[in-house]
Amino acid sequence: MTDRNSRPTTHGGPPDAGRSAHDSQCAKHLRLRMLIEAGEPTEPSTALRHAIAHQIVTCCAHSALKSHRLAWGWTVEQAVDACHAMCHEQGLGARGLTERSWLGWEAGGLPNWDYRDLLCRLFQTGPVALGFGRDYTPGPARAVVSESPVPLHEGGSPADRRQAIELGTQSTLGAAVGAGLSGVLTGAAADAMEFTRRAEASNLGPRTVEHLELVIEGIKANFVHTTPSELFRQVRWYRQKVAGLLDGQHTLREGRYLYRCAGQLSIVLGWLSYDLGDAIAADAYCLDAWEHGWQAEDGTICTWAMDTQASVALANHRPAVARDAALKGLRHAPDGSATATGIGAQLARAYAQLGDYDHFTDALHATRAGLDQLTTQDDPLVATNAGRVAAYAASSYLWLGQPSQALPYAKEALAFYGNAGPEKRSPTREASARLDLALAYVELGAPEDAAQEVDTALASKRLTNSVLSHLTDLATAMNRKYPALDITRTVHNHRLTLAASLNHPALRSP
Image 1 (cartoon, rainbow, N blue to C red):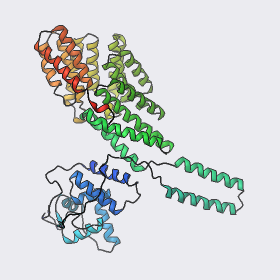
Image 2 (image 1 turned 60 degrees about the vertical axis):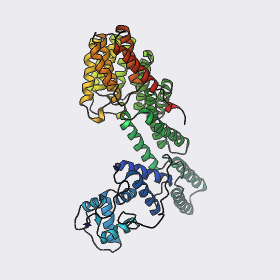
Image 3 (image 1 turned 180 degrees about the vertical axis):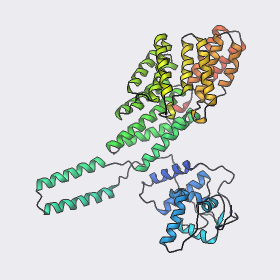
Image 4 (image 1 turned 30 degrees about the vertical axis):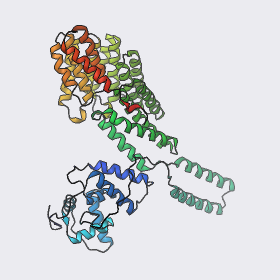
C-alpha cells in the first residue's frame, strides 16, 4: 500500500513471514499474562511493554509495529489519537496521520522518515525494533520473557492506594478531634475505617478477573470442537488456580465471582471426564460444580451440574440417578430459560430409560413447548436447540423399543446439524444421532442402511464416551439380530478400538 505518508515496502516482513498470524485475542492473552506476572502495574513500564511486544512478534507473527500497538493495548484508532496527542504535547506540529496509513504500515508499508521518527518517539524505541530497518550487530540481545504456563497473580495487594486512603481518613479524624470530638467517637470512627479496609482487602487484581473471563468464555465456545484430552489439562490447571485464589484474600463479591468460575470450570471438567470415559471423576466434578454454584447462589450453574450428571448416569444405564439429578436441577433452573429446557430434555430421557412412557411423553411435550418459546441461549456449552432435543427423543424412543418413532427424530437431529452454522454444530451429538439412526434401521430390519451411517459417524473428529455408549448399544443389537453379517463384526471391532482409545492418561495427575 502506498500513500503520501508511505513508500513502497523495502524492509523485511515480520518474523516467520510464511506463517499465518494469530488473531488479536492471542496477543491480548499474552499481554494480560505478562501484566499479571509483573504484579498488574497501573502504568506498565516501557521496558515491560517492549517485552510484551517481543513476545507477540514471536508467538503471533504480527509485524513489529502491530505488535507494539497491541502491547500498548491500543486499537488502531487509539494509536493514531495517541500519536496526534504526542505531537501536540511535545510541540512537534500537526500531522495528517489516518487509520488507513497506520494499517498500511502494519501490513508492510514503510513510513517516510518523518513518520518513522514519530512512531519511534511514540513507542520509545528505535527503527529496528519497529521493523523499519535491520540490525547487523553480531549476537543481538533478546528480550527475556516467561515461557511458563499462564500463572494467575497470587499476591501484591494495592497497599499504596489503601495507605493513602488511611492517611487521608486519619487527617479527617484529626480535624474532627481538634473540633472537640470525643475520644469514644474517635475510636468508633477508626473502627469503622478498619472494618472498611478489611472488607475491601483483596489480592485479586482486575486483570486476573479479565483473564479468567476470557479463558472461560474461550473454553466454552470451543468445547465441542476441541479434542477432550487436549482440553482437559488446560481446564484442570485453571480450576486449581481458582481454588488457590479462593484460599487467598478477596472481597465477598470477588469470592462469589470466583465460586461461579470454579463451578463453570468443574462443569467443563465433568463433561470432559465423561467424554474420556471416567464416570467417577465426572460425578465428582458435577458434585463440586453443584456445591460452588449453590455457594454462589447461582441456579444456572447448579442446573448445569445436574444436567451433566444426568448424562453421565444415562450413559452408564443408571436411569433412577439421572431422573433424580434432572428433578434436582429443574428446581433451580431459571423459569423459561434454555437451562430449564435442557434439563427437561434430560428428565424425558431418564423416564424413557426407566420405561415410564407416560412421564416420558409429558416431559418431552413440555420440553418441545419450552424450546418453541426460547429467544436466547444461556451458554454455548449447554446450548439447548432443536438438534439436541430431537437427538434425545431418538435415543428415548429406542430405549422404549419404538424404532419407528426414533427414526424421524434421528433424521431431524441430523438435518438440524447439517444446516446449522459452526457455532451450533456438535460433532459428538451428530455422531451419536447417526448411530441411533443406524440402530433404528437395524431394529427395523434394514442392516444394510445402517452400515453407511456407522462409517459416517465414526469419521467424526470428536469421538467420545457418549459415542462409545451409542456404538455399544448398536453392536449389541446387531449381534442379537444379525450375528453372521460382516457389518456386525465390523461394528464390534470399531467398538473395541474406540474403547481402547478412550483409555487415556489425561485424567491422571501430571
